[in-house]
Length: 108
Picture 1: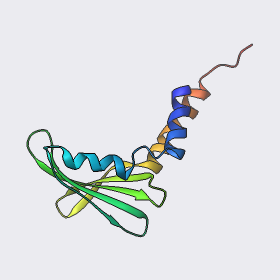
Picture 2 (picture 1 turned 135 degrees about the vertical axis):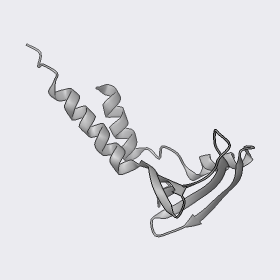
Picture 3 (picture 1 turned 180 degrees about the horizontal axis):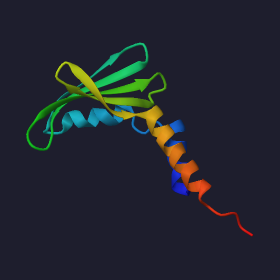
Picture 4 (picture 1 turned 135 degrees about the horizontal axis):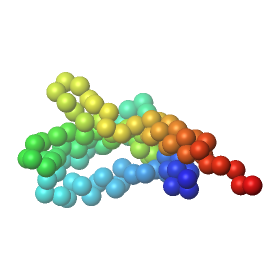
């Protein structure tokens, strides 16, 4: 249960990953580019890289104005598929916590 509480805390308050962490990826051999631009939410890091199997993929990391990662998208043709969503991860962690805590018997 402590692991669930930590996960909830991290999802609510930790940046998880910052735009600065992703900058180092540009130095890796399997990355073609890492570029940054702003939108209404905050900062977007766009990265093109070669993944296992030799396929080239484009990922978008959406950060809020405090540089906290909010979502990761993967380009799939003309659409972007959500790979990570902070809000959904918070909900899953809370659900897991509540489900575990409801099965714990009170001490007598």
